[in-house]
Amino acid sequence: MTAPELRKALRFGPFEVDLCARELRKSGLRIKLQGKPFQILTVLLDRPGEIVSREELRRNLWPEDEYGAFDQSLNTAMKKLRHALGDSAVTPRFIETQSRQGYRFVAPVQTIAAAPVLPATQGTPAISTPGRSMRRWTAIVAVAFAVVLVLQLPRVWQHRAPGVSTRNIRSIVVLPLMNLNTGAEHDYFADGLTDALITNLSRISALRVISRTSAMHYKETHKLLPEIGRELKVDGVVEGAVQRAGLRVRVSVKLIHVATEQNLWAEIYEGDLQDIFSLENEMAAAIARKIGIRVTPQESARLSRSLRLDPEAYEAYLKGRFFWNMRSADGLQKALRYFHEALEKEPAYALAHAGLADCYNLLSFYGSARPTDSFPKAKAAAMKALDLDENMAEAHAALGYSRLHFDWDWPGAEAEFRRALELNPGYANALHWRSHYLLAMGQTEEAYETAKRALDLDPLNQSINAHLGHHFIHTERYDEAVAQMKTALEINPASARCHALLGRAFEGKRLFGQAKAEFQEAIRLSGDEQQLRARLAHVYASEGNVKAARELLNRLEKESPANYVSPYVLALAHTALGEYDRAFQYLARAYSLRQEELIYIKTDPDLKPLRSDPRFLELVRRIKLPV
Image (cartoon, rainbow, N blue to C red; front, side, top):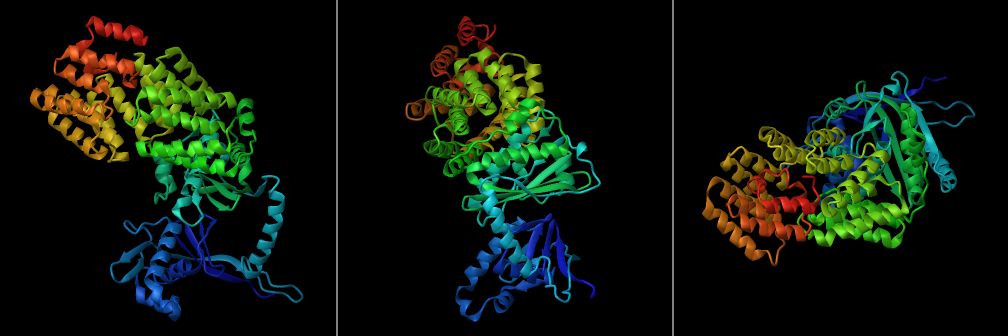
């Protein structure tokens, strides 16, 4: 028997290129890359560190009859190649563009041996792995499997590597699943499945799961797994990829031990989009089984639930969550549209009703709606979701948010947050919002501990980081507030809200120049938001620049009939000017509008001058806050 021939493969970063099979893989998972993009990659890998000119690529890879469309074709191919590698033309990790010259592969390239090609023996057809004949056979098998998979969602492949025990895994992050379909417009689907897997795993009380917002910071990251593990303080990483073909979806996932970077196991799931919930639940249950984590009977029951959905409703829901997670006025409006679209297809879709509730809860906070317009809709949507599924943590948390910020129903809010956390102990938003409740109640130590627990689950969530800064401001720990808000701004330097809170912290330290600079930056980033201009007026008044404060307030008060300006923030500015009667007039208006900031009147340091006034005590009583 002739010795088997070893096929040549190249490795760079987490990628391998099998030159015989013409396949690109990342951490063992095949990535769709064909035609010109793959050919360009092989040319660049053949000459790492050298500039390969555009003319050379044209001459070697493009037929003469395609020269006319060469520039556009090459640019499109390079875009697809960079997308497959998760690379950037601006900050390249792999392929560097040389202006008006060509391209250079800048990462180290290692030659390795792929799986051997076995020679043919007499009477036995040759089998190449995975050559052309093998790929034909794989296609035939795939068709046969598809017939079976239409009716069920079985696990079709499993592997567990020896050496490291999965029993050591007690905390994980699910990295954003890779979108194997061409085009970033399909990212919402991969992101949505990532979100669902995180949500299902976070329901397991014995497992610490990093929340979605922090996980998404590592989308297309170039960081190594040990670095990610250190930053998030996790033992394991789940990563994988998603591919769709019509109504069929295929998801590959693997579990990696962070300290050793060893693959512990991997599975591939395939099924119909109508049965997507079964697929999502089965993935989470399988991970829990492999880790050996304790799952309570109640948690197991929730992971085994099955629901068939209209595929278009599911896609609309994923798009709604995609835009809701942007946390912007424009994003919320788009999210509302998609959640409504999902409900038109599936009126009994409880998660879509919960999505509506989350949107309406945040509309007034992001300045695009009056509380009296948005919060009643939020409550109605949350209660509808609970009518359909009383064990939905998201709906309980959303209802708690409405009862806290609009109804001022303190016991009702606390009950909803507690129930949400019973159902999903790893739901960071429920912890985050409960810390709001505890701060309003004056339970500052427990509020701080609860906010820290939320941050432990979602360390890169800017809203949770910002709320911790807000907590420090309301407890007059201004040095800690400055440090916290600088940390929050490292996550997103373009956050208007974080610059505003940093401005408030500087104002508390009576560093008025720095405070004004932060508020002016916040106003610029927000597109001249009125609430922020009112906050700047407060800084002017606090430093004694009465003229500048009055000019700003006069303009805002003229604009308020046409553009919503928070009466609560206007009350703060008049308080700083010593105009207490005017401040109480605005507080009365804030009360009539059910302004959500009113829940903090007992802790807001900007209202200190009013606290001994009988009118303030009466307002506290009417809001039903404990005296």
